[in-house]
Image 1 (spheres, rainbow, N blue to C red):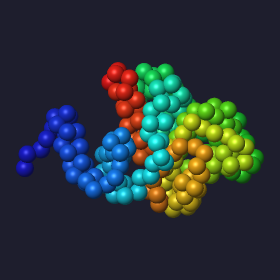
Image 2 (cartoon, rainbow, N blue to C red):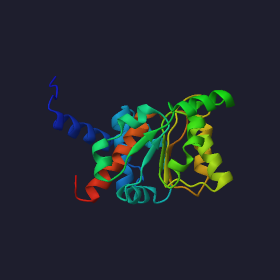
Image 3 (cartoon, rainbow, N blue to C red):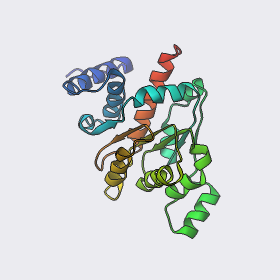
Image 4 (tube, helix red, strand yellow):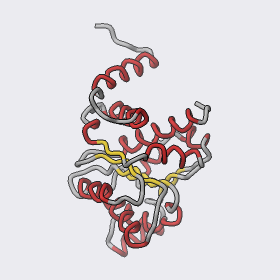
Length: 213
């Protein structure tokens, strides 16, 4: 058995195999690039069955990124996985507030998750920017409450929290709203690697579109 060891050839063969798995799906060309990166990151072709894009979201996301919009993530694992090089090229930055002392104290006092409190605490940083939820359903629920109750609008949302408690329901609520463009995946799957794959795919497309890739 011949083992491919050259990095470029490994990725090329991986993408060829993934392309075979994606035949028959109705994703746009740009959506398929995002899905391919998710499948590549997870080693799970069934993500093609559960990825959901609101109408025109990729085009809107690329516009936001090209304008230098910032990213706010629910957990550090997502933030550190995002391509700093491409985000910087586009003029953006990334932040996560889950470990901020005020967030920790307020979450303890309110008996809510730090992820949820971080969204409340950082609402001004999130407003008109990009919110990426890759782990905590409570962060997505809180974000959706702000959108519904306060007319609070991020530029777009990547919402792919994972787990057996609340993740399916949070993503269902995300799909029901039509005020903010979003990318999500249905069911209990998701997680930080999925969120990172989605964002990095979008960043790559945005950089390529600007001719800096």
